[in-house]
Image (tube, rainbow, N blue to C red; front, side, top):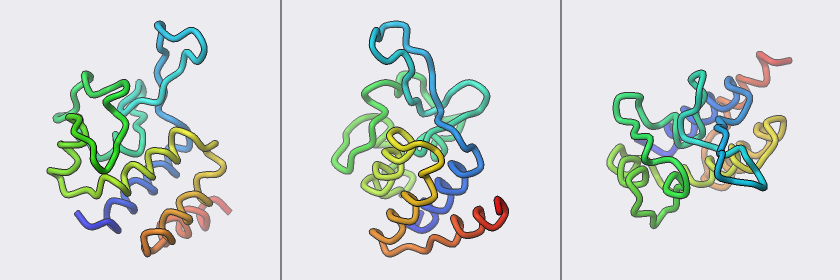
Length: 130
């Protein structure tokens, strides 16, 4: 899959979803909510939307769900095998995990610019929201 195709799929998904894919973590005292690949109600994070329901493994959640370009986790191996650029997916994942959803369009444009990609999918979404 091209970087542009990956970007388009993830950006379109995040903008339509409009919120993080989160799950309660009963073992964490400070921050009980965690970003996850697949959450209840069909919510998915930036990396999670690239993982089909059929291929998804709940064991991939937690610290292993973080996508790094040199990552050797199962989710990284899966994404690499599907032709996704791990550095791009990691940057998209950080937008989902760290930014408020109202900041996503700006951050997605920044990523598009950094990778020399078109942000047309963000433009189209903003036109429908205006």
